[in-house]
Image (tube, rainbow over all chains, first blue to last red; front, side, top):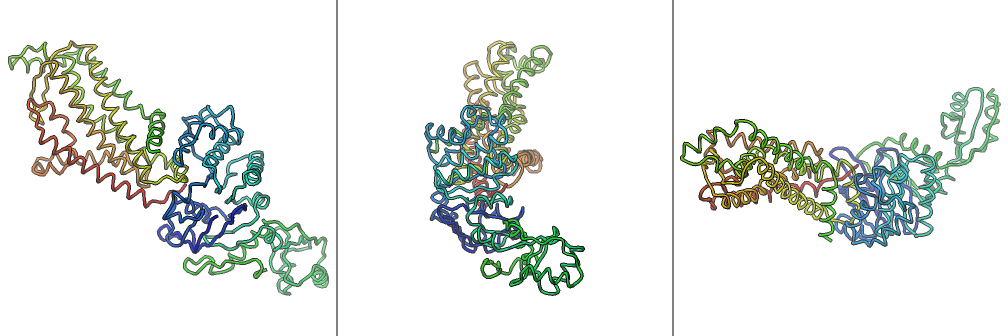
Length: 318
Length: 279
């Protein structure tokens, strides 16, 4: 559904996206992860033909966006982090206006979409009277108007309260289940991505550092909770002995390949440390993401602008 | 589709309160000017001038004459301000508010979007000039009798007297020509609006361009080059008030304004086409 081939985008001297290759298959919920400013929105902007790639190819729904934007975006809907509307007009009028940039849309279709997102009864009120959640629903309604096959969601949970986030999550799942949409979700809310997406790509400083299934990513990093007399010194000793690969500031360690927890405990006890607790933690996308960011940070080429992006495959790095 | 988008663009434009600032200001300014003429001795110099020429002053100190007198400063200062305000808003305000990004996730071409917006700007210019003419005549008629038209525009060497019906037709023709001034300044602001700048900056840049052109046009040493100045051609509406209308000069200015506008539009479209639209 979406194919990015070695796409690079430079804003002057700054490289926003570097040599990005990405494939989003039909029918999947694909997560695009990264810090703020990692290049996610720029990548989505290029998919929508709003940002011109410096080099590379962006194919959406089988058409090159830069050459045939009209055909590429005919069946695409998008939602941005802070959806903007004509606040002085009603929700209905906003939908009429935005729909006219795609194709003539019947009143019946607009009503249908309003019902679907649950805005019925408020569609003729001015948008400036809408709550944040209602604006999010209106944003969803405008995205659904052209009967899309593909939905691009750029930080759709931004500014929503926990209830709104929950509602948005259910809506995304419903869109996928009932309408069979392919969804690309850009977010830095790892918990959300973990619950929604089947596959993810992680972008750091404009480079893709991982692409693969969420389940695989979650399996890839196993953190152990370790409580000792002095965690920092214990970890330093464990590292020196080659038993631990990495650690976090929250009493978490990642064991080296082939090392079991009993070896770690034995080593610590023999080294004079009291081990109060060691337990395997549930593997989360967050843990994977953080370890990935640390790995990328420690790799000197990750911050260089010119060298090619090290696309890490989970199976050959872990 | 184009008509539908054009209709929606007008809907957006006229749904905003700030679009009406110009209309409200004309309403107030022209009312005040008409009252000042009515209740002060402001018309005395005009009366003396007419009587010195052997004319019956009462016949020419009329609603048409007062409306035309009001037109000169309004066309020189207020009209450029309000059309530049709207022209500068057309693209830049949508970019600033984020609605441009919402539009451009649709499969509409950027050129078409600009054309629709530009045409909406032209409609606004036309309606603002129409309001200027109608308000001027209405308020002056409330306080002055119907009569002939006396026009004195020393800068254009115009000193004309018309009977009421000819005066009215010249008044209408003057406003038709004034649309070209309004649309051209709107187009200039629209061009700046297509760049990645704030709406206020687009308006200020357009007005600066007009003022610089005006200043240069009025430097005596540049008199031989005045045909090169944008503002020189914006004044073509005044020529309609000459006893004998210099049509060749009007067509010359109209064609040059068409050239200026085509250039502004081309630059605007090119700038917008290559621009990255980001939040």
